Length: 84
Image 1 (cartoon, rainbow, N blue to C red):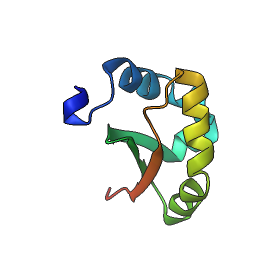
Image 2: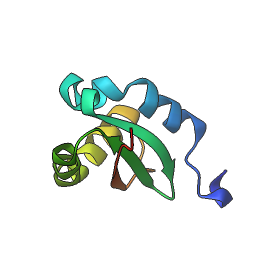
Image 3: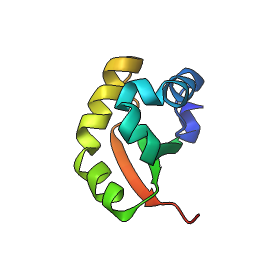
Image 4: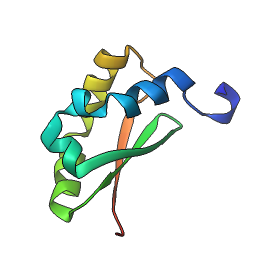
């Protein structure tokens, strides 16, 4: 998996399964992890205001994931706006 720039399966499972605990219920209601590749966690948000908030909180989210999942595999957060 390393040569594909993919995170280990345990990291993906932990981030997705524990998202609400990592970021809190309020953020989890508006921002959901979509994928992880090349150290980048892509978050999908439901509103432009949340996109700005998540970009601003990017480093904090990386720190929370690092602590909760005990990994340094995620280094950056990228935010995309939901199309739905």
